[in-house]
Length: 106
Image (cartoon, rainbow, N blue to C red):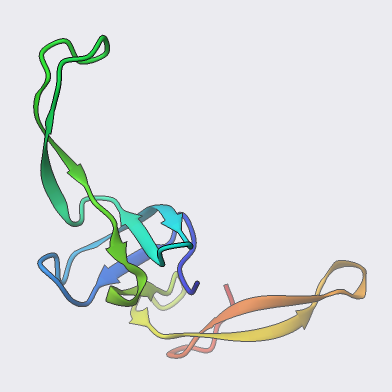
């Protein structure tokens, strides 16, 4: 997936279009991600020992990874992501992500 945990992303489609947030969780099996402050839904919860009152809780729900663009940490713009291989530790090849706007690796 082009999105990793702790990336800053911009939502490009859906009800939360235009919002930015940090990726909290990646679910690669379903190609979904959980973004902080995006796709907020109300959940009706039963009373438990942790929440004795229960009630209506607002929480983030997953969005499909194709609906977000990664915000480049160097140029601070939402951009497409490319990949390149570089020599890593011990001569191993390592796959790095590249910003298509500024060509910086991250």
